Amino acid sequence: MTDVTAPAPTLQTTPTTRLSLPPLQLGQLTVDVPVVLAPMAGVTNRAFRRLCRDYGGGLYVTEMVTARALVERRPESLRIIEHDDDEEIRSIQIYGVDAVNVGKAVRMVAEEDRADHIDLNFGCPVPKVTKNGGGSALPWKRDLFEAIVTTAVREASRAQIPVTVKMRKGIDEDHLTFLDAAKTARDAGVAAIALHGRTAAQHYSGQADWDAIAELREAIPDVPVLGNGDIFSAEDAARMVEQTGVDGVVVGRGCQGRPWLFGDLQNAFEGSPERFRPGVAEVADIIHRHAQLLVETFGDEQRGMREIRKHVAWYFHGYPVGGQLRAQMAQVATLEQFRELLDQLDLSLPYPGAAVEGPRGRAGSPKKPHLPDGWLDSRILGDAERLGLADAELDISGG
Ligand SMILES: Cc1cc2nc3c(=O)[nH]c(=O)nc-3n(C[C@H](O)[C@H](O)[C@H](O)COP(=O)(O)O)c2cc1C
Image (cartoon, protein in one colour):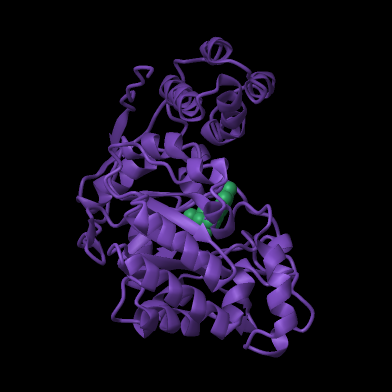
């Protein structure tokens, strides 16, 4: 193993609101800082989770894995659910479209002691998934949703593994599902419910609806509710907690290229005004370390370097870095070459301030959700629809 130690980024103090939330209780598990790294396909692998964990506490979820691929023991799926030895709560996310496969996958995880926490993904808005009734289209079918969650909770309970669900508000504003789905999930015995305050139709556009998160918090007083959507700083997290009363926050795009955000979040939860404000030299060290960890995780320099390329734009978002150098870094092939390119940056440049803050990552525009014909006509799954669902689990990644 390479000796990859975390560089210590510059700290600055900012006026702050103290986030007075107790630790997050998920069944028998206690999450010290009520912050969750949102599952992100292609991002939240072992390397990235390691990097984030160096800065702060919380719950760090894997990329999603499909139930069927897990049951079939596909090597890539088994890789996705691997954890470092020091990941205290081994958290994984499963995506599935039928109770049988989800049940088998959860049973396998429980019997083989492969995780301490399982999250179920009902938020994926990708057209090739929703057009067959999967992802964020699925909670519309009350019976199917109930069957999947009930089966998962039952199988997980054999090993006292808490199950949580992550969902969107619904398909579109006229077809909201979050309130009834959350009640179903609560009755099925989930340990928490995470709500991304967007509909499938919104994809990642516009603003997350925190009022819906507050509405859910109020409607389900007996289960922890986690708020998700548009937290790009510790101050955003504080505002969400204040406005919605959630028991914890789930952070996705805000930490892309900024693993130190988990340090800011922990500081905020502990009432400390310190915030990480890395200059160019520190960012260069952190992204290089990320690349080293990816190479280690995949055991393959080529693969690791392919993976780091997409992170370049995120890490240097808002930093004054020339287009040509950015382009070269986005095609980097070896760790050594990466270091050489990073050394060409003006390493004396400080943290640029507002330019690196605020929204980052996927945004785009709203899209009419693709759904199976007649999907919205009934909230009960029809036989033909059941057949179509099988395709909603093929070759998908990301939510
Ligand atoms: C690149 C990417 C991959 C994602 N993959 C998943 C996934 O595998 N499972 C999931 O439930 N959500 C996934 N999401 C959604 C996020 O978990 C999160 O709900 C969403 O980004 C909103 O939170 P944010 O505003 O903090 O980014 C993904 C999002 C992005 C940007």
